[in-house]
Length: 203
Image (cartoon, rainbow, N blue to C red):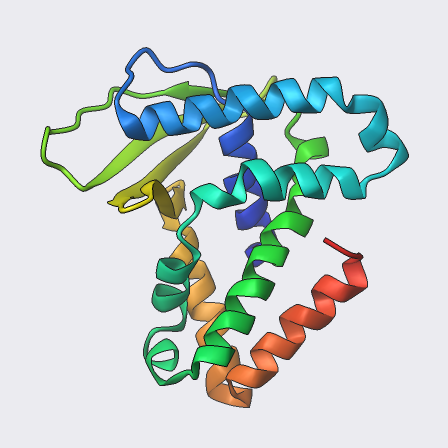
């Protein structure tokens, strides 16, 4: 499913990045996250093989905090987010997060040999939204262009979108999620995500 493929790319890119030369906050966020994740995966390789759920725990602890799920939720659901109740918003974000976690496991296997190269990055002193352009390179495969969209929040820089070869992750979600809500309602979308996440195992 295209939805899960996009998510897999998103998570992998935060983990398998080459160090950036700049200490500007958006790049530092990705670099520090990558370093910590790679160290943790190496240290817990045996534990992960014995208990795959540990991998999901590591992702939850180290990667997902750097995403702005509320902003992504607003964008993906559009007018339906505005009309949603606080409980619906909370449940949607919960299942949205779980979706990313469970997609990561497959991505780890598929992209373990990947290398990320940062393209030239420029950022003004007062900018609160930036794009970080990268390329995903794998042996004997064409490179894939990846663009992170980040914004500055009270809790630091957060990722709110990723574009793969110019195709926005948020736009992909927006199309599939809004179609589902339009046809069956928001509760049905949440129930479908919850059922899929439950079927895949605990997060």
